[in-house]
Image 1: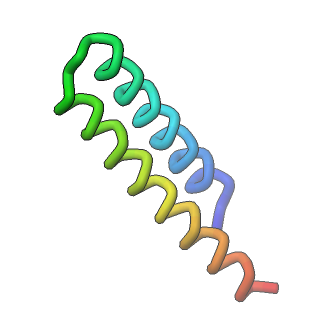
Image 2 (image 1 turned 90 degrees about the horizontal axis):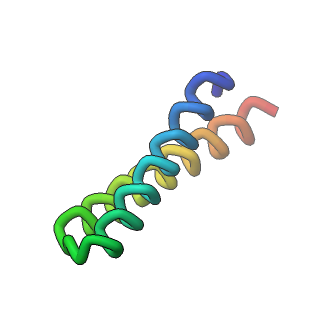
Length: 57
């Protein structure tokens, strides 16, 4: 995987963490859940990146 994709997925994870934190601080359960889901999605994409990298070696 290219560094660009990895950077995008890390940024997506960070954005999800920020949403989750904002949801916790404002007592907004929907925003908190949205942030957790975004982090999960980013983590799955990162795992896919890692698997693709492993097969390239």
